[in-house]
Image 1: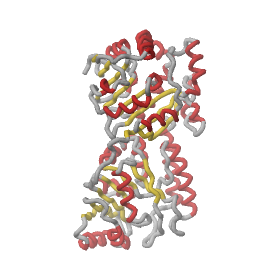
Image 2: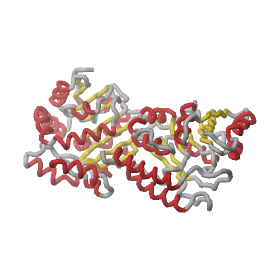
Image 3: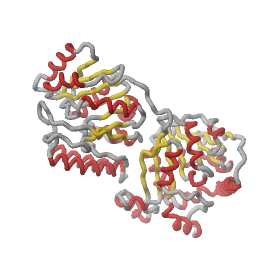
Image 4: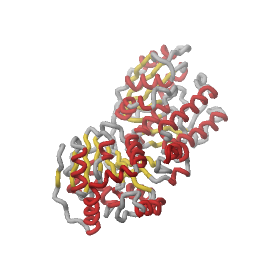
Length: 485
C-alpha cells in the first residue's frame, strides 16, 4: 500500500494529545534536526541494519518521518505514528512504504495491520507510551514465535547531557519521556511474555569529532563495563506464547572419522526419543574401516532409519554441512561419534528445542565433573577462557563453545546457511559457523550440561596448538564482525 491509511483514533489521554500536537509541530523540522546530528543518526540506523537483515516484513511503531524504516529496506515496511503530519512527511519521502496514523497502544488498531511481521521495532517509542506493559503484550497480535521485537532507547545516564543539548539548540526538543533503564525495559518485556535474547550498548561518543567518535565507539565503546556508558541501548526479544513445536521428526548427524569401534555402541545406546528418528553417519576418509562398519550396522539394524553419507570435503564443519544437507528431519542434532557426549543425553536436546525453551541448544561439558582423561588440563583452561570471550562477543551466555553436540531446527539451519556469506566459510570445526549464525538470527541459546566421558576407542582429532591458534583467529574475526564494525 503506497498511500496514507487512517484509522478512527480512540480517545487519547491528555498526555498523548500533547505528544501528538508536539510531533505535528516538529514534523517539518525533523530533517533539519537529523542534519544537525548526522553521525548519531547514521550510526543508529547502521546498527539497526545489523540487527534487521534486508528483505524482512518490518513494523516500525513510532516511525516518525520514516527514515529508520526506509534504512532497513524491508520487503514489506509498515510505519505507524500518532502524528498525522509525521506520517504525511514519511509518505511523501518514501512512497514505496506503508505509513499509517494510529495509536500503537490500541489493540483494535494493531489488529488492522497486515501482520504478522518478522521484526517489530520500537525506536524511542517506549518512552512515550502510557502503559508500556499492556502495549508490549498487545504486540502478540502481529507476531509469531519467530518474530523478533527490537526496543531501542537512550540511556537515562545521559539525561542531563540530552537536556543541555536541547537547551543549546543542538538537539530536537522532546516532551517528558518515561524514565526507563535497560533493566526496566527487560522486566516489562518479560511481564508481557517476551523474552529478552540480547542486549547491546552503542555510541559511547555520539559525535564524529574529526574521526575520534568512530575510533572510540569501535574499540573502547564495545569493551565490557565501558559499553554500559553508551548513549544508545538495544534489546532484542522473542515472543513466549505458542512456542512449542509438538513432536517433529529429527535427524541425528554423526560425523565419523576413524571411529570404527564406536559405531555399533552409538546406535545401540541412542534412544528412540521421537516417533520419526533418522541417523545420518557422515564418514570422513577413515583409515580404520569405519565406512564398512557403518554399512554393516545399517544392515544389522534394519528397524532403524540409518543412512551413510561419504564426505567429499575435509574437516568436521564440512561433514556437518553434508549431513544437514542430506537430513530429512525437522530437527537437526549433532552427536560426535567418539561418544564423549553420551548418546543417552540426546533426548534432552530434542526436548529443550521442541518445548520452545530455546532455538539453539548447545551442550556444555564444563558444569559437571568429567572423567579423568576426558579433557587435558590446557584444553580445559582454554575452553573456560574462550567461553568468557564468546559470551562477551555474542551477548548470550556460553560456558562451552566447543562442545560438539548441538540442536536446532532445519528451518533455522537453512537460514544460517543462506546468511553464511556474512561470516564466510572460515570455521573448520562447524561449531562457530552455527553459533555465529544463530546469534545473527537472534536465536535464543540454551545450554544443557552433559557428563563428558573419556574416549573408549580411537584418538582425538583435535590439535591443541594448531586449533588454538585458529580459535584466536575466530575471536578476532568475530570481534570485527560483531563488535568493532
